[in-house]
Image: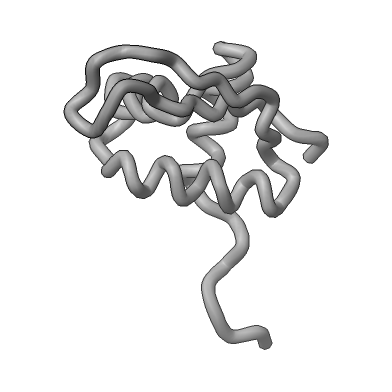
Length: 87
């Protein structure tokens, strides 16, 4: 018997379902779709599972875009786009 947290996650499964429909999306878009379709979760939780999913090969980063604009934190934002990985 192995102690610790199980590898599987319902959040990652739901994110995979979203990405399979959208093809690719950046983290905030995935979060907006997630809360529309399922019960609410935090943005940080979605970002955590995207990052963990990349480590496990479930998702992959396909593009990073820097967009100019007027944001409360500055003049630009970096958007990482994710898609389904090889698993």
